[in-house]
Image (cartoon, rainbow, N blue to C red; front, side):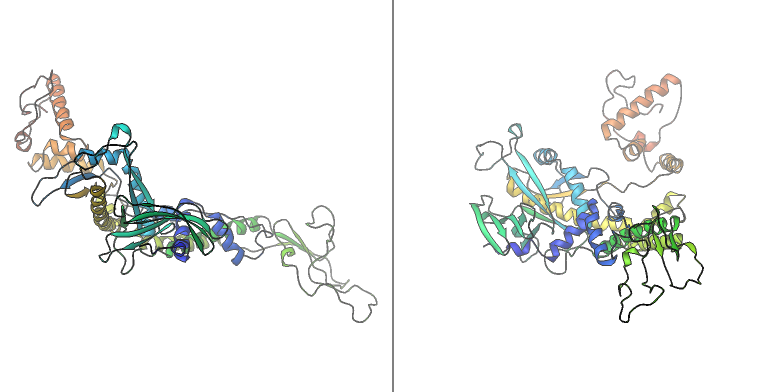
Length: 507
């Protein structure tokens, strides 16, 4: 039964999530101008120019992301069994550009704390099943369609376990005219499309759900919410982004005022230098000399704040006392911009630390060894491990859905092995460490090529044979360690002088 409606897709929660997405994607000016309308009176007349700096993107993309290298996808179909590589599943994933897609999943999960992946089976042409089971035909264009949904454009109903999505509704158009949009609702029984205007929704069309379930998967950042389906989007980074944008906008105005101060004088000004030549005398009202009838009002009782100075303006102040000598003075605010900038930098650093990000700058001490780098980034590395656990659980649920969409896939549990984090490396230190390991028999040259050079076994052996060949020709003699000699290499490539022999000669 359908239980979600228009109110689930246009409310305060969806608005907050969309604001966070706008901040990450750099669509910030509209939010800044709305903020200035409420906090900086007459900002346009006072020559404020909105400036933004995308600190949200900087923090999120330094915050324990997982896809620094393609992860390895393996399927386990029983306890104690070796992992299996399913070529059909891998081709499904490759055809859907899954790596680029899940890089976005990684980022938006970190940003919003929870997202939904909609998995749809695309069959390019009518096809016959084999034994009642559908198998994808990649030659004719069959594919797995992946769609990233967020709290900004969707809502769900979960089962009692909180792992299976029973109903999914998501926007199929932008929200226009305040509250007009279309959306799609998916349940186990049917798929329906709706048109919403205000608080009234009209059914456009409906069709049976031939899958018999909702093919979607929840992905969480580090943990599931205490209650409900969605994790509440963080407020701290929204507040920080607002403060940063206001601060740099104010700083730009302060810099301009300190370079181009306002001219104050009690003399009547005329000429092109006056901002408003038609009324050169403005400011506090005064009474002219001579007889004035009783009850006469001397100018307006209110001051025109927008005319009281500013970049390139002249403010004329007259006392009405002819004995007061005229004066001319440039004046304006003087701010210690360095101190104000330091305050904002410290605020950014504090919030970034809450996101396990070390915001280094020239004033901070810099690591001078690999160990110090690991110590400095310890929180980020620990966060990455926690996020990897949640992402592995999401991939497990993801594969369960894929198995229901494609019954010919290998039965079992998908396990994802993420590459270790990429940290700056002291090359000399690393080479010394590996030389010691190989000399002590605790590692082999094959291990070195796998780990440091990133080669697979075949490519690593080819490299070993190549080194042997070159060293023999040059007369260079190096004894292999027992750790390398004990390995069983594949046959040497044809044409190699060491073909058919173990690499126990010169390397």
